[in-house]
Length: 88
Image 1 (cartoon, rainbow, N blue to C red):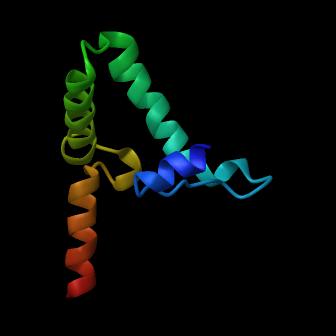
Image 2 (cartoon, helix red, strand yellow):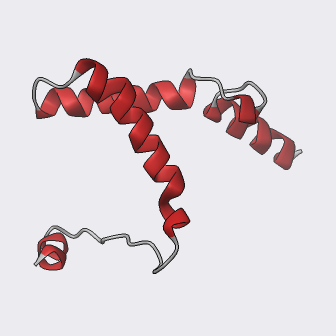
Image 3 (tube, rainbow, N blue to C red):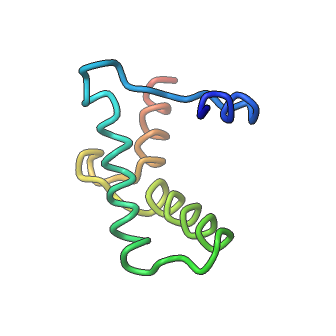
């Protein structure tokens, strides 16, 4: 039934490989942090508020939040630096 609903909305379900729980670890960690930092601290008033807060959080994570794994850069800065070096 779920497959039919997804298909009717032109969506494709993504499923991890059998017996490999690490396939989705990065996404699971991102959503766990998102829930901790947004949902559990602030909550949502309605669906539009939820969409706006998630959009703002993703923008913040990509453009303002530095990552030590990325040499103290934001993901966007790191990607741009990497592309710049690759294109030289």
